[in-house]
Image (cartoon, rainbow, N blue to C red):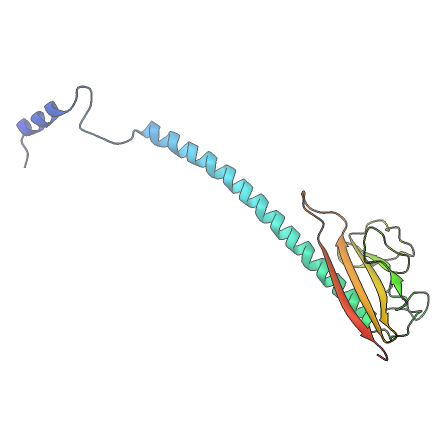
Amino acid sequence: MTTDNQCTEREAELPRGSSGDSGSTLVEVIVAILIMGTLAAGLLSMAALALTQSENQGHLSARTAEYAQDKMEQLLVLSYGDSTSDTRVFPASVAGGTGLTPGGSANPAAPTVGYVDYLDASGNLLASNSATPPTGWFYQRVWQVTPLSGTLKEIKVTAIVARSIGRTERPSATLVSLKSFPF
């Protein structure tokens, strides 16, 4: 139990102008909270942007891989000697195309007529009979058929997105498979 004399003695020991209470004032706490809030808002907006970019790029990369695989499966179903099936339409028609005739290009910047098709943003095939992209395309698929021997062909399919998000490269996927005679 303290007496009034003891309290007065303790206060006398403190430097002049200070009170017995130590700690932060309400104004100091509010200023600190405002500074922390400003920093947190800046960091959160950067984190949200990074998360959105990563999710979008991942989604586009997955779609290009999926659409390249779809095209590869469509080509592998054809017989080794097929030279007329048109795989630019779905389902493939028996005439009007190149089938597995050697040719084409796996370079999306240099598509070859008969070895390129285009999809919209939802993955729907768009009609196109030339290497010129149709209006509204979002994905491009190009393929190349290369004979390796008299009984073996290499099929290469590349799918790419029309435009990238931000300053990154456009997502793309390339698949390579072998087709042998008589299959």
